[in-house]
Length: 357
Image 1: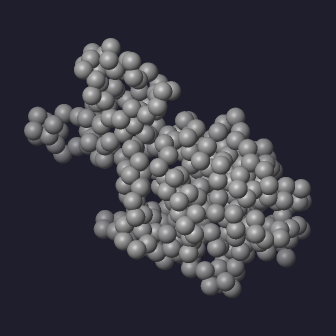
Image 2 (image 1 turned 180 degrees about the horizontal axis):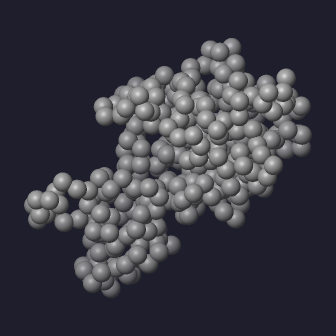
């Protein structure tokens, strides 16, 4: 069971606003939490936050969970005081109109709502298609351009308004679950490992700009130069209507963290993870992934310098890249246990070369 302290941190993390490229608020919350148990904590020039344990050990293990989120950015302010926007990351256009947002300005958050032409005024053929983001705007209640310009500047980032809430006994919904839930798992794993006697160095990294091309993991992994890398991200749950299990596999909320077999996952490390899950009776689900490689921080960590032994651990997620993503806390707990027990067993002379006994 997650402690009250951990759940409070999770809520605070999910309530932050941090579109890719502007993760300042999220980094501050993450940094302050890691500082309570890490040997050292820093935030680098990109905005990645790194917490370290046992830094001088020979074998280095990196944990990465990205805490940036999809959002928007201010492009133009009209004479009517409406803010025209562009997407930051992969936005689901179907969910955009009517979304409550905050414009992130230097003076603070300015509330607004994303507007579009009312359905009554759409042509019949327009009603069957998603509204293009270029045809939407943010309305902050300004009466004209001059009034809006006093509050908002061109380039200001825009985030979906915080909406964390617990649903039922074990599930939570929030904007930005992708991938603040993974960053949370990384932090909690470091917290648990701080209670153990480690033979390896552990770097827990909240990475940035994943939604724009895995950028934060690329730079932080280069700096750390780990021997082993774990990425913690979300994956598509397939326990809701309309998702093909024959294409995406069988992934269910509440049945455990998901471990993957594809080119991004080191074979030897995968065997070690599965052995730990079995011996410690930790619930896990298996995935072949819907792609052969890429899409998460795992990929760029693996290709760092001369290569890294990597593994992806995923949290099942419903409604990905919408304002109301949903995850199950039992899967989160299983991911923390799996990573903690696996890393705690590492020796300084571990080998991850496939096919070498």
